[in-house]
Length: 353
Image (cartoon, rainbow, N blue to C red; front, top):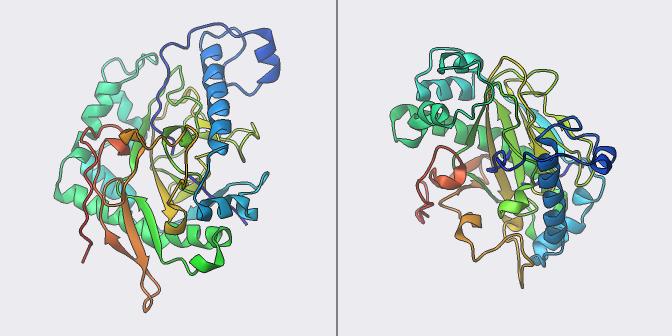
């Protein structure tokens, strides 16, 4: 049984990473993507050690009974590999076409960096270029609504059934059958242009308030290099340190345990920009993250670490007659869905007809 939990998340590369690594660090962490002596190595490793310490703190959280039951199950057991790749029909779910239409792009996404001024300077972050590129995603339009509908349908028809099938073994029998699932109301968009440095530091999504039973879904819109330099590196289970790149194709998406499995990007040394979507899915019985007290990671006093149904999350219910998942609550894009969104989360209480 494969288990899934909470995206290449919001953290960006730390500008204060330029210190020198030690010999002991080199011996213990030979997987670090910067060679000994590189000015980025020590900072990269420091972020990893922070991730490890916060993951340990996270593991001490007092969870709700349903989540505690799930974490004791075989599906979430130590050593269980937490990843699966799904295929989808690109003609039935034309998410790439609809994404390109929103942006008004006519060029191939993997070469869009070529039109940026000084595109051959691989030391620039290109934040403003990306903001301009993705700005149409922040405005209501027919094209964005079409993209939204395609995304919703893909999640309900392809992703949710796979997650339910995998995680039903982690749910107490009293909560079966699973009838409601929450999913990110809008996907996060990532643009990783050719660069000399990584753009996403080592992290687990639990560091940003996501619960241990949510699922990360990572969907590329461009071809990935077989070396993985323009992909996302993920360990197979928490603490494994066997980081390998996701190498799915356009027309596929990978589910993984982003809440507890560390993940990061490396320097994109290719000549191709990677564009991808990521989002999260969580079963309703496993959505309540805590019961009595929390020991530090999911700080419910911090609004930025709270994710609400009708805001960050949409919801879907299983129709008894058709056996299909139907959306019942529609959330909306907000700052919690990542760059370039800046508006606060607004929770809508009304259902969807």
